[in-house]
Length: 128
Image 1 (cartoon, rainbow, N blue to C red):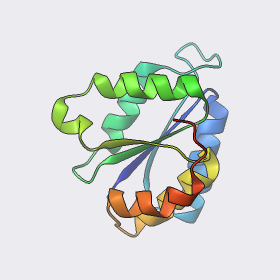
Image 2: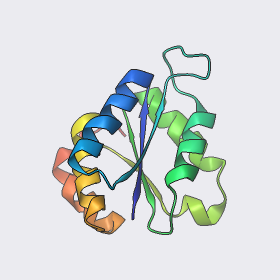
Image 3: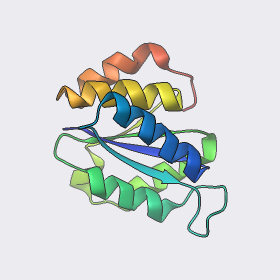
C-alpha cells in the first residue's frame, strides 16, 4: 500500500490531517511530520525523513505539505534517502487536508501511486 506523509509547520495541523484521513480510511498508512523538534512552528527534515521511513514500501510514498518551506524541507529529506527509495517518493501539489483525505481513501483501496496521483490532478494549487 502507498504510504502518506503529512508535512506541516504545525504539529497540530499535521496530526489533525492524519486523524481526519484515518476516519475515512482507517487502514491507510499515514505519518504526521509537523512542527520542529523543539515543539515550535516550522518543519524538521529529520521528522520528515523518519515519517517517510515508517510508511515506506515498494508501492511508494506520497508527501503532502502546507507551505513553501515545508516543500523545500520535504525535498531535502528525500535527498537523505537511498536512491532506490527516492525513486518511489512523490511530493504532491494539492490542498493539505483534502489531498490527504482523497489519497488515504485511494491508497486504502490498494491503488498504485500513479492512480492516486491521477485522482489528485484536478486539485493542484501550483504550490510546486
